Length: 144
Image (cartoon, rainbow, N blue to C red; front, top):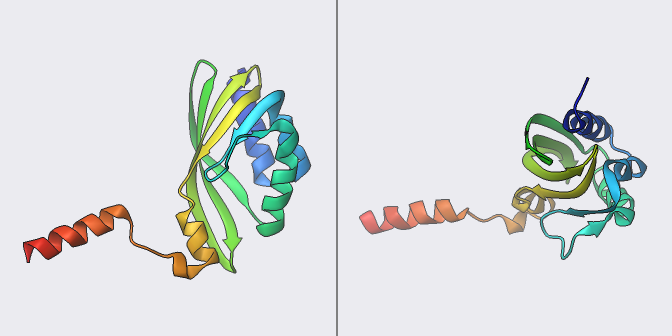
């Protein structure tokens, strides 16, 4: 018999395999929130469907494939890869979701991912080296 964590992971995986905006609120308790990088504030459960409608309008083929997960008590981490066509190019990026569960639904979800490559795909002029690449170039220049 699956635990509440395993049940949530199965439901999360099912919804993200073929996303439909109206299904996402199923993952949340009524008082739950969602926070993604760049959001000025967490979204409420009531705002999640509208947010996902916007996401799916911009990238209709977006889907997420979990690669693994770990839990301690009611805190769950799901390591995934997101796949989508952005600005006409197939792309993917890693994401980790931190999920606080109450039973088999989330009371809080926060996603962690680097959105820079998405912005570059949309607007190539936004490309820039990473801080690590800058540091390596700086050290190489000093070394002569």
